[in-house]
Length: 371
Image (cartoon, rainbow, N blue to C red; front, top):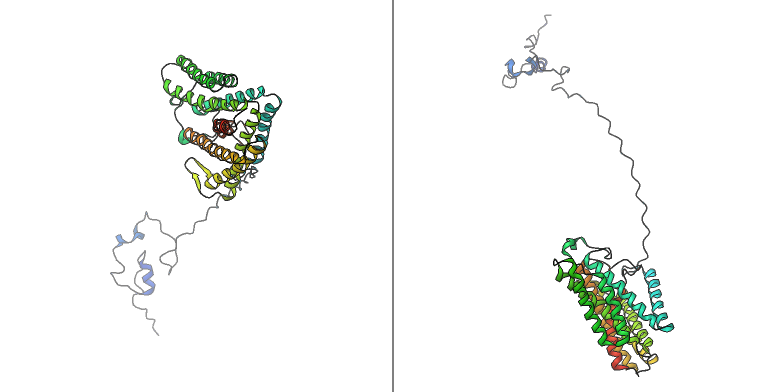
């Protein structure tokens, strides 16, 4: 029996891709071009991959994977700092209460033990508050919590002279104690004139800006503080000062409690976002009731006088707080200083009292004139 080879079996097997068709018979010329130039296998410079018959196209060589670099060990997070004992109003409430009690004790002791010592307390408080305001206005170390958006060139900020203001505190307080309202106004005039002369030594650049700032501080702090001294001048002056301070404390406490528990509608969101109309209502209720009791039992006047007195003190106390908040926002500081824990600066505690003292002096002169 003769062996018959299939057609094309004995055909010469060309290199390259035609090896595949040699085992499966001839293919159409258009599918497998016969031009050796089209076959990359004819290029002796080309590297031919190793493969077996029937394995076309050849599988790409498997490259060994490089081991991934080891991941760095996780860095342990630092332990969380202990949360401060702040109230909902954003202050350290225990520290604020302790400092407030100490300050109140100093004032009451000076009034009850030796009344001229009250002058020293008022003069010292006015001097410290003037220093705080001078630092906050000029961007010095007294200002606390400065905002980046209010950063300005130090040369463009006012620099009121501090020494004439400190001297003016002593002069105004002393004149108010010994000579009354007219002398207090005279002391303010002398203080402003002293700042005008003192500032001449620094040249004309920024002169008007510094004088305006110094005048604001002189009126805002020592002049208004002088009315507290005027309250203490009569024989029952210690009682008048205590009644006024108690009304301010009632206003702050009633506003704080009502604002924390019921505050929903901001009263002045662009000035003091935490003050609410509910807090104002709490201040009015607390001072209305407290003023009636204080006026009746301490100053021995009709209780309805006390209601009017308490409502007026609450209104001016809130205005004083808002006025200082507006000033701090304009200066870009959170507190006037960090002198008092839980309060900020001393000026941050005097803002309500400075507005309440002149109002109390006028109201008590009408409702409970001294004998």
